[in-house]
Length: 511
Ligand code: UN1
Image 1 (cartoon, rainbow, N blue to C red):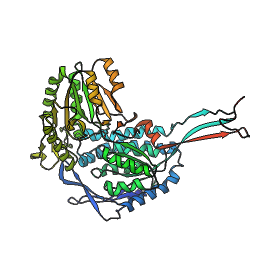
Image 2 (cartoon, rainbow, N blue to C red):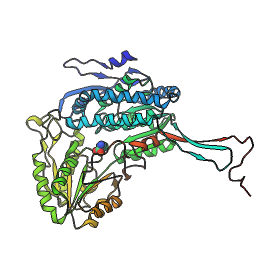
Image 3 (cartoon, helix red, strand yellow):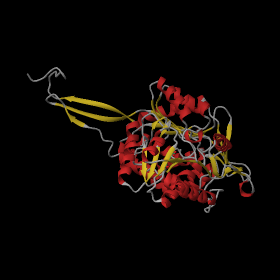
Image 4 (cartoon, helix red, strand yellow):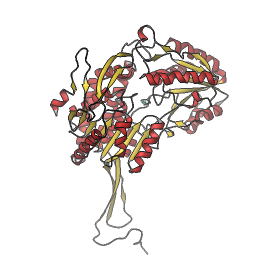
């Protein structure tokens, strides 16, 4: 297996890109279809990052079969031993951080400081999950009967399928793979077709750290051809998906038919409230980072800024001024603030929403255009875009855009702000800027979302806290921290009766 890992690709030449194979049962294998797809650099589409397999059901079945076989042994490896492998992977990932960040910027577009953060998020997750190997606590509790012992233990589920997005191409796979592995599950992962290389980098590290063959498998391809067969396979016990609410609904209903555990992390339309008493400079910095970081392509991106009327004009004016100064370009250049959209389709969606906003009567305060001259000629770039005077009912204030387009909405007071913030289909992240401790605590209680930040933007979740949201953002599960351990384990209650006689719960009671 070591040999196959040192040569996971058919080496490219200067004008022929690398060809990557699926990774199944510790071997690099071609897809049964004989077909492939290209992964191109969104900052310069002349640059082909790699050629990947376009897989179908037969390939998925093979990977699931390998994972099912591997589960028989992996589940019996003591959790602290599994954790040691994950700990080693954390150390290796930290060493490889710069290379993997560069690969990620090249295939996905976000700027280097963010792709370094993405790899770091996987390092953090790995250290946390390695620690879980010596916890994985379950309750022991008194029995109601004498000479009887009771406890609940965590068992792995079996084969887990993961379908991951392109916006956090190492961090999000790590949120899924690492807790699944430490709990004793085996995995088949289908990365987004825009960012498969980053998943290869993560999995390569896990295997180099000692994860045995068949325990983690990668099958690349498109959702309908490669993702769908995972949802229907009877041997898959859990499905974890991060992506749009529309796709999440299909994944949830399909998985339900065979009673799979299903974790959905879906859309967001995250509000940031700025009250009259806020530190305005801090709120501005937060708004720029929250709205235009990752080119607005985060589930947690700040996409609505709800500003109280006393500071509204000053805030919007400064926001527009600062947004215009952001440098847009190739994220490999350290001086760049914002990279391209991930692909042409996403760019078209962003530009369509600019038109929708204009037609709805919102005021385009800055941006709105594609950038296609000079250094931008070969990528999917657009200007950071601010709409002001947005009515909260407008589509640009209700629908997830997933691009660098932010809506500024005026509000009267705190109560009005909370109502606007909550009056939405989604509920992932939320933020409020205020110096009033009473309002801050009221917002912590009243903002209906999975995450609330006080005096910080809507992005920046840490890996040991629950990550996920309410309403159309998910189905009640959380990633990160202990929530992930809950998802990837099944409870078993164990009773040991050492009384040497039949004791009947609920029936044998003292007179
Ligand atoms: C996502 O938005 O898809 O909190 C994930 C954050 C990151 C993770 C975001 N740590 O912004």
